[in-house]
Image (cartoon, rainbow, N blue to C red; front, side):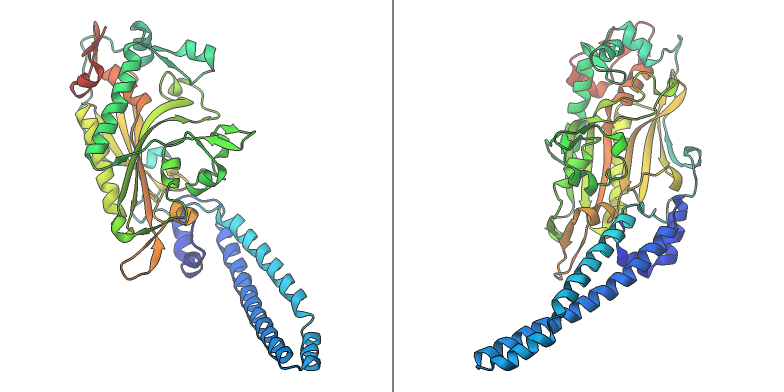
Length: 423
């Protein structure tokens, strides 16, 4: 959530950066500033009246102690209307704060100056291309055909049990999933991340803290009786570990990783582009979260991007890195890199990771602060990244490592799988 003081003091810049994100309601900025002017004036009046009331109460107390009851009663009569005025001002202030909050939560995060303008994924900036597409001496099959051929993923069985988007992994397919999770967690631990096990259900306060609520409630599964949500990513419970926390500057950066299943309704997702593992309602992911000093968050973003790329390099996958344009970024992000892997059979790029810097946007919602060496308390910066999301990584491994008579396993995974081929 943006800070009101920043909006008020940087109106033109806020409008300029919101335009880069193609935000369709710029008039909210002036509405917020106008309400804030009234709110601050009301707060000043309330503070002044409260000060007068406290002074009068003190004076009445002194008069009563000195036996001057008539003088005390006279002051009481003079100030009798003040209590009602205080009540009215307090109610006005609460109403103004609610109205301002309701507008603030509609504003997305401001994109960094590095974010290119654009409205669609076609406007994203390719910043790096690594490797070359796999070459085959046979007809390359898409992963859903390979999954059926080698009996490692059953999409129809998932439909029977739950519905579309909930595949069942079998035999070596299940072991490949487990191998990737262990590999990703081991690499993250080696890179200095602390592994966490976190709940797979969150409350509304946690969803608000990281920006899923009220923006994305339609994309999350809701348990109505308990008013809980299935997590869309481990980012949510990990980051909320630090909600309402004041850290010490020397504690930064905080680096956490976790494996969780992820649940996304993905309403309206149909067609060939979501076939097989391309888009699921339940999938596995290893997530990275960092809480950093504001001065170092963009350096951290580059480090996280390089780390995710190192995983793709070890897996031997042809990938590219995109800097997302304003129109393709999430509501909460200030800057995002997407990593996409080339699908050899589908002949298109598949997103396998997003690494984002949220600057203070989440921290302001979470009240996540740190105390500097000079004793000043300020908001931290938060970042997160997929390292990695499994479905499209599995799809890419199956498609890129296929042979005419089986599927090879990337060398770095063999010690985790216990086999080097699926046939």
